[in-house]
Amino acid sequence: MITASNITLRLGKKALFEEVNIKFTEGNCYGLIGANGAGKSTFLRILSGELEPTNGDIIITPGQRLSVLKQDHFKYDEYSVLDTVIMGNQRLYDIMKEKEAIYAKEDFTEEDGIRASELEGEFATMNGWEAESDAETLLNGLGIETELHYKQMSELTGSEKVKVLLAQALFGNPDILLLDEPTNHLDLAAIAWLEEFLINFDNTVIVVSHDRYFLNKVCTHIADIDYGKIQLYAGNYDFWYESSQLMIKQMKEANKKKEEKIKELQEFIQRFSANASKSKQATSRKRALEKIQLDEMRPSSRKYPYIDFRPNREIGNEVLQVEGISKTIDGVKVLDNVSFILGHDDKVAFVGPNTIATTTLFKILAGEMEPDEGTYKWGVTTSQAYFPKDNTKEFDCDDTIVDWLTQYSDEKDVTYVRGFLGRMLFSGDDGMKRVKVLSGGEKVRCLLSKMMISGANCLILDEPTNHLDMESITALNNGLIKFKGVLLFASQDHQFIQTTANRIMELTNNGGLIDKITTYDEYLDSDEMARKRQVMNLDETVSEDKVKE
Image 1 (tube, rainbow, N blue to C red):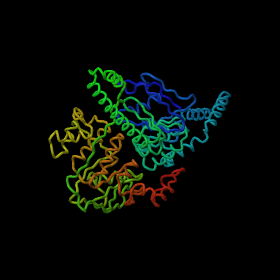
Image 2 (cartoon, helix red, strand yellow; image 1 turned 180 degrees about the vertical axis):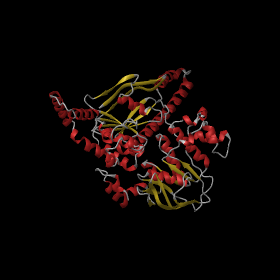
Image 3 (cartoon, one colour; image 1 turned 90 degrees about the horizontal axis):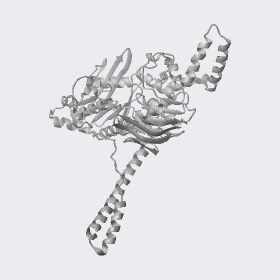
Image 4 (tube, rainbow, N blue to C red; image 1 turned 135 degrees about the horizontal axis):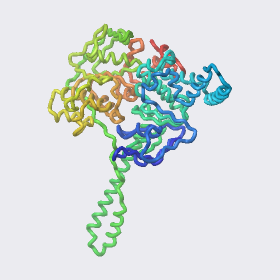
């Protein structure tokens, strides 16, 4: 169990947290939610001991081990993958290394023997003999191939490192598990595996995530940060949302009744306070009026952008024809003879672990990369807007936000451009910020403003929910559902895909294509996907090469 007692954190004059009291108990999974800047990650750092609060204490049950998902992807580059995972239990790892050093000595002394015996006893108590196999199970479950287990971390890709650090956090059955955005950069198969792991995890979990489906699957409670306070709700994310909205509605209705009562009492007092025969009744009503207190309706710190993609032109029947596109990158064929035709009502989600293939295809269709073979043709009535996964080049300039967006607008009027920025929560002086210093979430909102102002009727979005808070994801989700055009997108957000797409495409590990006109849930439940999941065997260790088609 971990308890926050009277936690206050001040950053200058601003209080990020004010006398927070909350208890996280064994057997529960807590989703920590709140608007961007509310302090979710900061609160996890306080719980972990990485950050000292201004006042208050963090109390952990004596003898319990706390594990944290690390964010530094380069910290373990000099270590092997297996060693990095086992470091999730630092004491066990230290014992292993001390044992190895003792047994490697040429002049093994009696003192060394005694020390080795002590270490062996502690090692056995900590299930040390199963450490490597346990680490391999976690790695395989998250999709790290067995052949990578003995490589150096420096040899892995960024997404592979993310999975290893997640395995490190999960290793050794920690008593308290702190996870900050654990689904970021994970493919959908790895997210599904993690969901099952956490559902079956018996100890305490506190997780920050912007994935609504994930929170609904794993959370038993929601801890909502708003205006420096944390309110605890039993149930998952949807239950929290319904409960919080119901609470607001009830408070508004209660206040409305109180306001009506106040008005009635004030009118009586005004009419009869000077009337001698009714002065006692007026005095009585004054006392009653003084006792009525309206419930404080403090506005939430959450802000929802307004996302509305309005095509300038209605799309015709001929949208996109792709014929035999192939592409090899760094000696690997990521696209192999890919062909498909899009209709004017298609909203296509590209899913599966081969994210490089999806990004490559999107770059080709957006005109940013040439295929090695094959052709594609957009219909004459189409216009395209592209959201890249890597937006570094987009913001490599010294422009202000207003100037940056104006260059993409046919209408150069500043008021017109600021209207689009205002919808994306850039108001007033925010428009004068330099784009190169924006946060990840702010850059995404700028790109979405660019797509809205374009009036395109075909949108290509590569992982658009990365860096967005829950409110912005919800707004984008609703905007794409309403969009009267063609959509091609990639996402690791289950709910986002399920509610938006009417067609699913998977670019397989050998560069081929599976194409189904269906919803995402129906796709996952299809016979073909059931067969693939059986082969992948997510509940047991398996090498990724077994699922290549």
